[in-house]
Length: 282
Ligand code: PAF
Image (cartoon, rainbow, N blue to C red):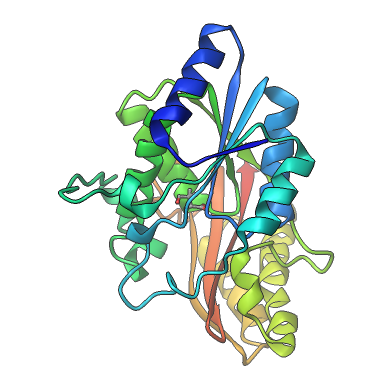
């Protein structure tokens, strides 16, 4: 595996691979790898000839009062894990290269960036959309791999890629969970032992939604109400939202039908955790 810091070299390597007829897969990350990231890399490894992982903690997607400085980082360990999975290139540019003096372009995927996490973290998804658009230009891959866990991010990036004609195939990879159901996240490292235990209630509430839908429930208020009841059993978990919506426009669905996203966000101590499930409802 080669670590690449320079974006021109990175683009050159990918262009040469493409010219040689090789299929290139990109896994964008902010590092501090866990099984969820490794699963994205394994999937890319299985489907592509050349796998590029980008590792860049993107400052523009963090609000002024958010955890950019505290965001967990361990470059050595990340490099070793990526190499073990068989990644070819680890692209890790400096912030000054990504955002040189004078940078002022924004990418805003309007309506779907304003709801759910976007309502609580204004500007967050503009930062995500801009950095992902830059990565798609620097690394002109055939396929890009994203976790289903960040459900709203996935919907926004798909929209952005379609609207801006990026010729990449988006691959959504199912959420990887701990044994007790907690979705893997770099931010789980902020949880105390007690908070870590309490956080499993998020998965249990999604399981509640799953069994209600399985047994025929279609009314969003009823499902949300039962999920809230489950979450309220844990005093350490402060629910921010539960949204039941379609999985393209993120419009609330009073009655469930089609591809339905059930997504939630909650604060547990200093950690802000998100989780979701997608259901095909007839
Ligand atoms: O999901 C993430 O890790 C980040 O939001 C991403 C897509 C790498 C953009 O910085």
